[in-house]
Amino acid sequence: MLHRWLRLLSYEAGAVGEAWSKTVMNRPTKTQKNRRRETVSRSKTLEILSVLNSFYSLRRLEVLFGIPYQVLWRYINLLNVPEEKTAEKIVETANRLRLLEKAAEEAYVKFEGDVYRLARHPGFIKLCSLLIESAVKELGVNYVYSASSEAVPLASAAAVKLEAEVCPTTCYVRCERERCSNNTLCFKSA
Image (cartoon, rainbow, N blue to C red; front, side, top):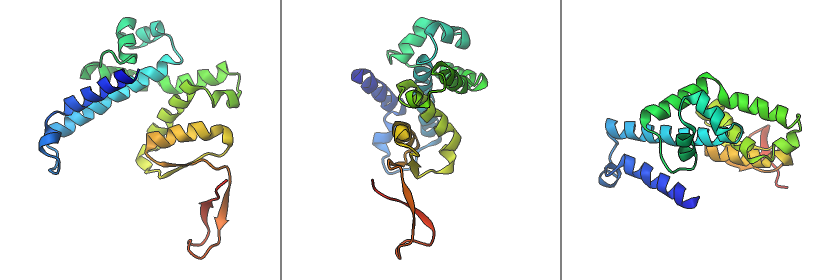
């Protein structure tokens, strides 16, 4: 699996091309920005497909996206990367049909509301981190706090997606120390 991720990373680096090696300190051109956006779109598409495959069969995804299940399998296993139009189609369909939200609801029903089991399910953790990222990415979150010890894996995954720091403690105190401003929340190490 690692070699497939490395292949994807080398593909993404190749998509941006020589421009990075030639202009390390210069501002990127409009074409370079478009290529980077395209690469992000493709990698985001692969991530969405991988998460959806945790909850839906390839046959069901074939019906939803109108793409043969063999092709979807190749995308999910990182053997192929979708073309730009296909990637846009997949993301648009997932957003229009609210597939990620529906998958979360169906997972909750499947686990009969047992949030402790659900919080440990790898597919659900990936799904929630995607949903959290899309909901709060533009807010500029710096820290992700886990309210309980069961939610530490989810908080960690969300922190990675948001490029934020994770506070894996379950307690916090009002800081009354001199070096902190009044009434700020500080995290106490466990």
